[in-house]
Amino acid sequence: MLMRKSPSIRHNWTKKETLALLQQPFNDLLHRAQQTHRYNFDPNKVQLSTLMNIKSGGCPEDCAYCPQSSRYQTGVEAEKLAAVQDVESRAQSAKDKGATRFCMGAAWRQPKQRDLDKVISMVKAVKKMKMETCVTLGMLSRDQADQLKAAGLDYYNHNIDSSPEYYTKIITTRDYDERLETLEHVRDAGINVCCGGIIGMGESIDDRADFLLILANMPSHPESVPINMLVKVEGTPLNDVETIDPIDFIRIIASARIMMPKSYVRLSAGRNEMSDEMQALSYLAGANSIFYGEKLLTTNNPQLQQDRELLKRLGIEPSENYSP
Ligand code: SAM
Ligand code: DTB
Ligand code: SF4
Image (tube, rainbow, N blue to C red; front, side, top):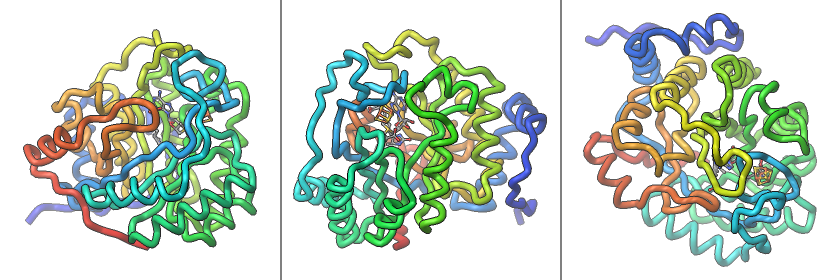
């Protein structure tokens, strides 16, 4: 019988502990992360979410990593909000291919009421197909969050992206507190929170620790924690940043798993630039969710067949759970 140490859900992590976690010998870190993972989840299952960019480009914000900001010449054109019918057919195809959640992203600072009404129709249509729904639309008022909840929305994605300090170097058109405010509105409206960030933007280890601390010390942990590896896009200010050491990236996944034991940790953007071995180590470190589909929002994700083959080689199966 495997000894299982009872883990506790904590919200009082300290900076010292977090830095110690991140910097301990790799094998010790992975061992603890795997123990935590096994205690809370089936270690051979992965949750599949498919993304659709429902409103591409032309965003007024200046996020230095983002190809959809109107401030940078990245070749991404500003498009209109997608039609509900297109969303329905993409969601159906994602479901047929095995995804359990459909995530719709819009390049907005904050949705206008008329646009929100349309997104609400999309959420209702996808819910009808018995898929989990997630949207990411930028900042939300409490009233907007309530409207999305009433439509049946399961998850709202809103990332804190980095530490409060590093955030000011990456985005100037909004501040960290505005981000936290939206997250509070989402939480208070009773929608599941999907919140994480991007690693590999040139941040320090202190920034990484602070980023994890903000997430892990929230009164309730986000149910879903996307960890994106920066996808460098020509034309964005972060295009020339130094590529992160894969081992350091795995350390973040493992630490997120340990600090938020019951959250789904999503190995998010950047998988197309990762080796099979780096992805395998991420699963070993406790990642149990991915974006599944050939495209993220504007950049490439691995081909479906490639993902299926890797998961098969690892003996990892897609989870079938649908929890409305
Ligand atoms: N506009 C909304 C917002 O920013 O909240 C929603 C869409 S935005 C594209 C969603 C998330 O995608 C960002 O918060 C960021 O974490 C991630 N993202 C954007 N560009 C990225 C890139 N080049 N590499 C990795 N992640 C990226
Ligand atoms: C998240 O954390 N990552 C996704 C999703 N939430 C919306 C987006 C990744 C975008 C990567 C760059 C692009 O494709 O434009
Ligand atoms: Fe706009 Fe979101 Fe991109 Fe920032 S991350 S520029 S808010 S789409």
